[in-house]
Amino acid sequence: MNTFDRVLSEEGLALRRTFPEVLQINVGKICNLTCIHCHVNAGPRRKEIMTRETVEAILGWLDGPGGMIGTVDLTGGAPEMIPDFYYFVSELRKRGRHVMDRCNLTILLESGYENLAGFLCEHEVEIVASMPCYEPENVEQQRGEGVFDASIEALQLLNRLGYGREDSLPLHLVYNPNGAFLPGNQPELEAAYKEQLRAVFGIEFGRLYTITNLPIARFASWLRHNDEYERYMDVLREAFNPSAVEGLMCRNTISVGWQGEVYDCDFNQQLGLQLSNGQPLFLWDLDLAEFAELEILTAEHCFGCTAGAGSSCGGALV
Ligand code: SF4
Ligand code: SF4
Image 1 (cartoon, helix red, strand yellow):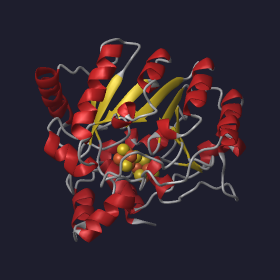
Image 2 (tube, rainbow, N blue to C red):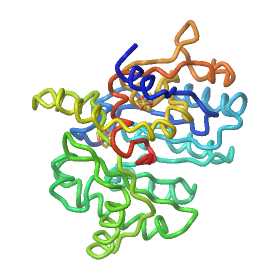
Image 3 (cartoon, rainbow, N blue to C red):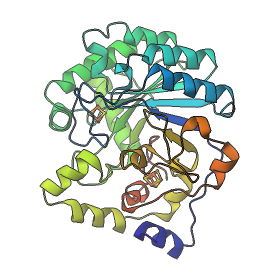
């Protein structure tokens, strides 16, 4: 039994699946940025990209066994950079699915992506955008030079299209700490973001989600390089919050990789913890009744989701 499972058991808790409401699809590792906290090790030279064949197989599954799943959450990398992004979103919307795009904002201003913001708007895609601070220094330290100005410009563009202002065009921001510490209080940070972004840049948005950096991939390398890995793990373990367990996203999400592999969450995906029913599981082989019985695969990094107020792709949990 790993330490995370032992702590759950000592608290009299068990991690059980509920009905999967969200299909979160990581369509590939290509990205126009190379942020230091990236848990995907994404970047411009990555070649792992979902093919049209895999897109079709996922759509086929949603037309059949996955018919009850209402939300498809597209992530990456920069999901918009795969060649079939427009096709995939259009097909999902035709099928009445709510579609979310985890967007790094800067991609909206890249050459070749001039129509992207309009496309997202036309298809009423919910945008969940990374914005680690409302001041330039922190953003550029974490995400690279010029990223703050580009993010502001992209948010202003989205606001002009109605994002963050109209109910049908939700725009939410994501904060993650710029180092080896837990996020601050979500409602307080949200209020500060709203005040600053409105006052200085005239920007409106819906919610701010605070997300804890998980100690895997590029962030784990950064921690080790700075001799911070063990200290950060202690911070996460000591801040274990039993109340966060009920809302953990692995309970109601199916996470799918660029080749169709099935995982409990995007973090397990990056660690290669593919689910198995005797053999490695791909979405098109997934039976939801069988899935409900599969154990959620945990390890030390799971303490990142239960620390403090908890953390998920939808922000704090308690
Ligand atoms: S954190 Fe997001 S924007 Fe940054 S490199 Fe990773 S996938 Fe790209
Ligand atoms: S890392 Fe994944 S499996 Fe572990 S607690 Fe978080 S969401 Fe669940």
